[in-house]
Length: 302
Image (cartoon, rainbow, N blue to C red; front, side, top):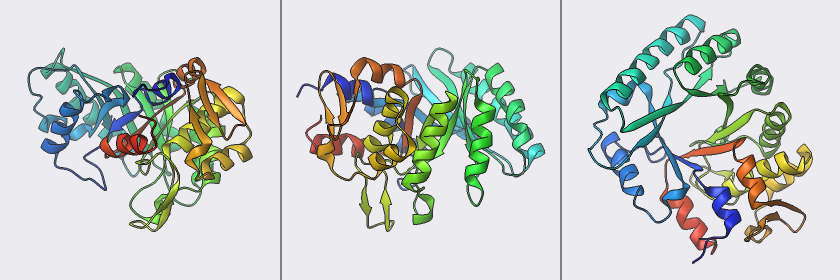
């Protein structure tokens, strides 16, 4: 079937393949084989980078042919400033070695890590080191009590940085790993107001919000989250309206046609506006490429 121009703009390069991570938790060889195979999928236009810890790049033997392949490297992190900065140097060394070994075959241009709650002051130093090494950094606030205050401080620190953005964790394998619609709406609004790019990770395998029995929690839908994010940018919707979009469990309310995306016959963003706003509402990590694709096919969108 013909894919609507608005859906193509909405979903283009939106899925960072994270097959190494739960719930899939695939061995590296299998996850990499999947990623290479997805390059030949008719819907490969939805696929973005391969997500891998920087320290595991040395394990990856790129097969000749195909590519170039794109990567998002995940940092080792650290419990405090000294540990984080020391580990960051190890991460950068691993990335440089990988780039040199597979020059022309790979692009490692994205980096993600969490800033420890005890050391928000290291943010600028981390960004400087990563940007100097040709990496766009997406930083995550440490979870737990006080998360919103930490996230607010981090978004403020990211303001005005062209090679940086905020990473929002949208789920996991336990109920407490899923932020509420109110928290997601707040994050989308805060990033929008600060003109900070945002990307998501975990819990967005499916397009529409729904209850998932395996984790005993409501899972966010990627059409909900990115639809709200795009409408937040282009329609400047308030936080309360974004929360309503995030809570919507009716797939009929998410309409894509050649002109644009419309939510519940109320708010529309054109295909061209989607393409522009995707620079700010970037992508999401998923341990599956097939599930999002198959669910969109089930909704007769693909």
